[in-house]
Length: 488
Ligand code: COA
Image 1 (cartoon, helix red, strand yellow):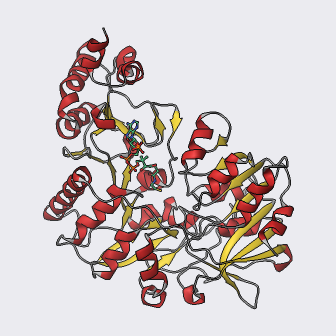
Image 2: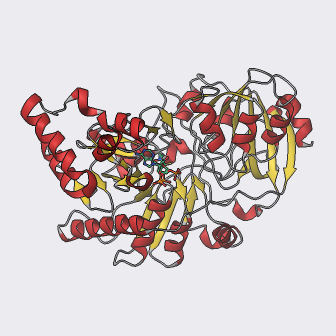
Image 3: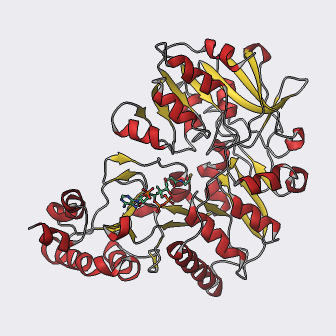
């Protein structure tokens, strides 16, 4: 049927599950048709996906008023604006946990929409460039609409490892012991009677917009490479490191890029998104294997990989996000997790999501799944933002996504703070000495010293002053102390 015909299955108040994980394998025509319908009819849906969608679908849905609630992640500027204006409810959820909420019925899916490469004769589905929450959506949905993407070569079959997590009480270990272990099937089994519509399209994934590395991201990458080299020297890591997880964005790409010109070899990755830098490392022979839930790459990289998918079948695997982000597997494999923060504080607590403690940026994504369970949990950030008016290291974070207990290393372009084995008062000195921009270092040290002398405690703070940098930013447009004097 056409996308417009399929849009008729949507009813006000429904919970809808869709494929799509950071643009990869998202549904591309049905939800757009739903947005059109919502312009003239009352339609308020709850939308559950793997992660963010591409092609402006999230913006189209929110602008037409089609959404009441969205989870578990988004990166869209229009959606962000509506969330922060209170027009759209948003549940910011660990990506490794959202499958649980579908399976336990908290988000019972009325209607599921899945992009696939083909439907096999036995009725099973061959996914495209992501798996996300597709397995649980198929299981939970009362009805399913299938989008067949005719641009995806059917020999993509074989890069997926589909695994059904059993219900509690009957759950067995997820038996992944090396990153290339496959434990499931190549396709998603589906009850054909659930399928109410099939829509064809020929739209590729929206390419990732990878920002080129700048001086700060290159310096951050170099600091991490130096840290790895020291870990090898001291015998805690080998030249092939441990399985890498890298968040999305230019820093993550720069870090992986930095590994390309290093002495490290036989690298492997256990992450949630495969980016350009992953395929560059695979093509240069530096990386042996990469496991994730999705691929989000530039057009050039997409063409290189999708048109030659046969060459990558023994080098990559895409898994459900309940597996790529499984605490059990991450802990077993010993992952080096590298994620990005908006701000962190002197004790190593990290805010990745809320600007000035209130306004949603994107969401926690999978960073929490990895940070808590990683062998080494690294957070990266530039030491300053907005032309230096914001210090990314503050006395106390204005929102906490990752507590000090889940943060081993903080890296800025200034340097690296190794917090392992340090108590809070030692952590503060390590962070202030190594990561803070010179414009803010003196004031931060003064804050810490006064907190120790005047208030004491295991984690000293002057509570009435702890957010003074954020209030100064709100009042003057800058966290710098001079900006307050200038105002007076
Ligand atoms: N206060 C306010 N704004 C800040 C800030 C702070 N402390 N630190 C950074 N910003 C702004 C930047 O100025 C930039 O704004 P702009 O878009 O207007 O230029 C924006 O935040 C993004 O920062 P940038 O330095 O370009 O980093 P990024 O693109 O790598 O994004 C995060 C950083 C934290 C927003 C992003 O990594 C994220 O959403 N992380 C959470 C999810 C996650 O970790 N996923 C990984 C597993 S999926």
